[in-house]
Image (cartoon, rainbow, N blue to C red; front, top):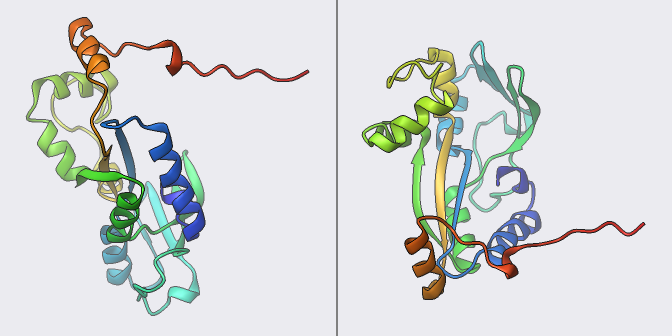
Length: 198
């Protein structure tokens, strides 16, 4: 989502696409950098760059005063480097603006949590712990504990998880079918076929 925040038109297009592709009652699960954490870290840094052995974030000189106008919530760019994974520009997402804009596209915010809070909350649930173990999502998968390095855990703190739900009532017949079969049923109209024209 944050890659679309370079300007308002792109951000609106991303939200319009999400809304258009969800049925009423449908859920979108997303992640994005936590602007509050990033700005707090920027303001604590001596210069315009901060990070650790795993990541670095660098803001351009235009943000030397480390202040961001609420009247200009788009185009707040920084460069993000994540060891062996990412090295590209990203944009700050003012979450209050994101929430208001999502509502304009019939998307209600159901959940928003920083990754640390999200992990701590869900590690109390046995099904989630088992999934995390199988995926090795918080280490090598050998235990129920978080066993990633402090530097990696700091990277997790830079992100948040959010859930949007499309307004409206879900199709009851489809919902009943999912419950009876124990999983999501794919209907003919759910399948999109893409053909190239040769």
